[in-house]
Length: 363
Image (cartoon, rainbow, N blue to C red; front, top):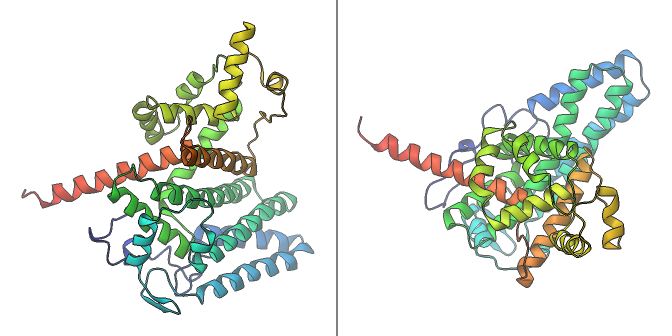
């Protein structure tokens, strides 16, 4: 993704999206109803349902039209990437970015966000549910495994777009980050709101999904917290960016604590209490099934590859991290996803700056 001018006063969408992404299924505002790949998947499923003369074809077609109508309604709202004369005054991309990076509001900011951002989130949820249903229909209609798997992957990618919106908002408010990084994140958030697509997250989501799947295959021993080393070893086989993140950042106490929460599926406070209890009782480690009885509370420690479980567990870790930061108490103040996405975005920004400097040096 190319960075905007250093003063961030203008945003040209052509600098961020290719002609292919601004396809025929895009309205003037640029909202992406279906990417070319998604359109081909819809076409493949429609053909399969037609061949078996499924009564579900009509319902499927109506759902696709509903999505297009919803996108058309959202497209009628003023673009976030253009100057707009609103009832409350003039809004520009620059003023939106300034309001995002300068906001010090705590709690739910839904009512402070542009209407288009809130409506677009609803569109993305509806689209996600549509693709989830498509995966079931694909199996029932006998569609080939490769196409069915592709539909599943697109569903996962949409879940990560929802997650990315949370992460961007969280990082934009983080005053410990350089202002240049926060402004870059604000631009990415505006583009996500406007198009409901994000190339950064398209690249990052397969990595986080692979890490999640690796987590489901581990059986860490609670107490000693054995399992972190196994995840680290698996990490080096997953992706260059992820392994670089582990090498560079795992020594940070916040990252380490966020990693433990991600790996064990329980909060920092529960992990701390469990360690103390086991140390007092002289027990080296326990299994997942024993955690609830030791903590004397119902704790869900089982893992699943279901994308809904991923998002639910992420949201719990996110809410806990925000509460700790607000109350200034021990434990991770960010999620593992926050740390990783921030690391990737900052690495990309530094690389772009380095490339820009190199281009200016006479050859």
